[in-house]
Image (tube, rainbow, N blue to C red; front, side, top):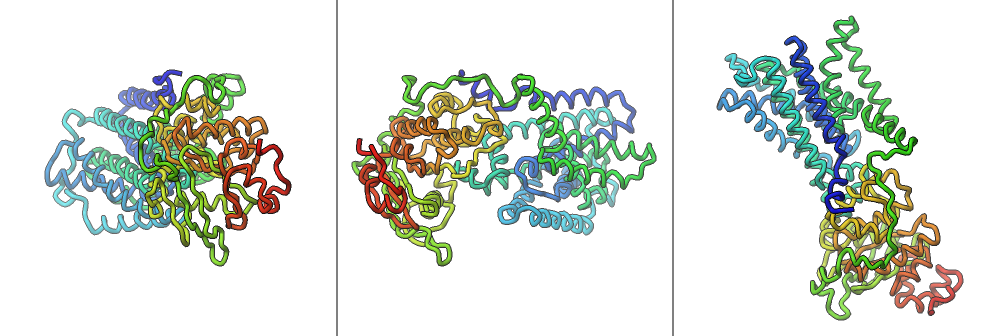
Length: 595
């Protein structure tokens, strides 16, 4: 596969990129033929669709419950009115400034998500919505007393032309969101919703990822509020009640506003359906109840709203007919490990750097590491030195402290004592994502590859470049870049996680049971690949594994833990023949190790 093809496979399919904008274009052509009253309603559909899209960013992508999106719309509307009274700027400029004005508030509310989750975050954001409406009641909308309404641009004064302007703004916002979706931060939003630990482990700051989602959501909602002012000339506080934020959340969840199509559907339901109910003689109170019940049903199915369900059904139908689906690609026959295609990352790319290249200097030095959970000592003064160009094994019975050691080295657990040095520099005080950026990458005992991403998108999240993917995936015998991770069985995800950990060009990679769930021949093949990692990728390896065939086949040295204490450490053959290791872990000596 060529680099250009690899790069294009990272992004959504052409259909997914073009369909939402085509839908807006078709809707525009349709509305231009409608009477002004219906055009007015479709303008409301676009503004509501923007606010639903903001819910799709915060909740649909990052899975943070925000019940204050109409409050951000109120901020955008108020700023547009204030600018109109004091500066009389061009309308589009006022909308942009109104959107930017809401960004700091979005970041401020996003700070709550660093401590609160689920229902607690929902209550906090709903409280912000209530506080916002109380404040606005004390502060009249600019221009309301002297009748200074916000004027539409002269070229867009009619309903039809203003709808055209709203459609252009909507398309521009959708393009911005789509651009960010295809960047690393967009992948990180999906990663955060699935696993904050996995997000931090690839070097992304979970705090920044969450703040970015709230900030962008606030901007998009505020742009919708600015368009609402242009539609009406002035707005009523009744347009921004906390109940409206609750309702738009329900509608966005129902339609699947994570996708642009779903946001457009939410706008149409929110603006057009009430008028249809009025004409059909159905009480308007029925609509919110239907939205709420529908949202509960859709969420209970585990899909991303109605649009997400349709996508899954489309994939399943095409798969049953043997047709390619989004996120799948042609079969590829992998080359065997150690093929003559050459290393994906030439070791010379890391050579000559840092103290790790001095004779005998460990790339990772763990000294006196102690971890306590109350009265339980999980690690007791553990010392491990991992030398450059080596694979070091860490074995022991369940509960010995192996995963705890990896969690502590990578920053997920704070030690009671001890030190962790990377190339001679202390990293004990660094947060998880900064340790990952410094050169300490890891995999997890429980697989944490992000199921919503394709293989290529997951590798992009890990910090790789498309031109690096092909050799790496062949070396690790991974599925193609355009295969969705959710469509890969758990055992096949393990090599993908190992590949992702290598893309950050780490100094040391910590692999926590990468062979779990593999067949015997697959485990042996993976052992050969792991043994080749130091030379091929220029990094050392700490391997935690219960499969002794993999340990013997891959490791240069071993450390054995039992009840958090080191009972043996040294060359593989000598350690596995140690009577203490046989008694505590192996049961019987492993034959043929010395050979």
